[in-house]
Length: 330
Image (cartoon, rainbow, N blue to C red):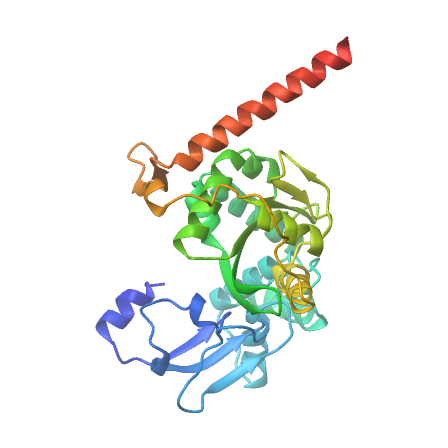
């Protein structure tokens, strides 16, 4: 499909229907609010939901995928989606629901998968899901820290009695979480840089293993650690930068609702909490540029003092492991 920027460049006053989101913070900056004539979504109505000056079409259902809603709408209107459209909707549902194994999966998702598979001529849904997840993971393994942090990131605004601010929450879904976590020394600094540049109060990155249905949470500072401990209470490792989230895998159902409840119950940043890496100026974050030696054209952050600090911390962790090993041998 053509980029929306190109389409709106040719037709600047075109009507737009938002799908799979309704927050202004997630809208393409090319789209103006008064162009929006509809919303088809499956997410909660939270902060920064679009406000319009006229009535618009709204279809929001608590199903596992927005594509399930669209497939259902095809059928209720007596229309059969074309084979390639059915295949695209099928893949989207499998992705959103983690092959119908995720906690957001509903009977409607299962029904539409069966119908779409028949229309698209897919005989082995499990094989399709496996191939899809492997392809996605292979691509993720090539992405830079900047792309991973900013690729699937959403921001949420909170106004509790003890905490007010925006929280960014990024998710990376993969079949091989170890490959992603090997980049932690670059992901942590990039999280801090993103937090500073977007003026966020907190930022998290969840790495989800979509085969084993488990996840872990990268923590880039003391505030993130304090909030994560209160919300999830998982075991923390890697010098306070990694929390085990066990079998939690859904941002929509298992991450954000818990954070929302904790903040609404009065959570506040602990007094005298030490400062983290985000206690630096914007001029120390370096700059972004395309890596000329990368065949995928990845965008890398260059000249950040945060990366140097993270690498030094990793060296300290390695030295501590060596020391621990020496003590065990002795």
